[in-house]
Length: 189
Image (cartoon, rainbow, N blue to C red):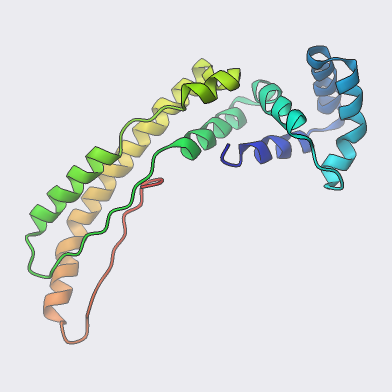
């Protein structure tokens, strides 16, 4: 889940005693007295790392804790899940010092437009964890998609400014400059 399980554990292990008791009581109300007693007993060992949390307990915590987290923390988790499952790509272009930079920029912009699309957390993941299907998580997805589109625009605008300068450097200093590289990275692209 893109490290979000460890984020949930970190949140869990950072709770103060009052918050922890409330979580354990609610956990017992949902999963039963025996799982609550077990969680209370094992908590210090999980926190110290001397005992590993079972997959079942980790899954329960991942389902159970996020709805009880502060909104900002929960949305950060949703963003991590969104980034983890998001698509990725890699393209490399070799551009000569005399290439028409307008054509190069158009080609790169076209590629970015085709690979950087709005993205949603997959339904099968949302179906496993009800809190991911909540309205505030959907708003977070929309915002992440919006900012990724803005990042794409900023990257192409920046490249539009950089490429002519890099080409001029290659032309004017060909005896000293054999190659120049620049990189655009937008999330996993």
